[in-house]
Image (cartoon, rainbow, N blue to C red; front, side, top):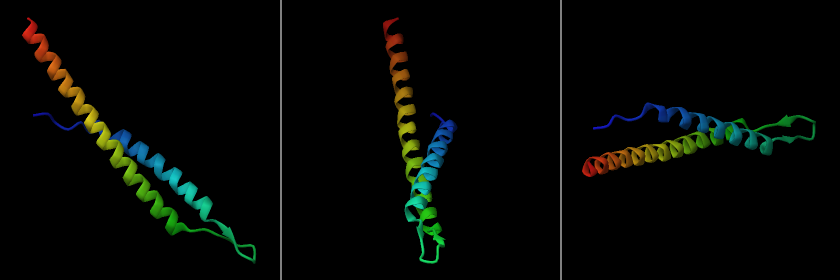
Length: 88
């Protein structure tokens, strides 16, 4: 039985953080407006919610893809090793 690859977490967290930063920045810029008195009002709750959702969706998506890639590579290596043994 194969152990899970712990290195999958690193790129998933990295891309999740990048997505959270990008989504939070876009939401913060699009939600900012200026009141009649000249005060700039932002939406920190909406920015936070969008950033957290982006982190989760992208992080989980990248992790799923990487798990499938590593499993496919392991299966291909097993298949290649079996083919090499049957040729010998």
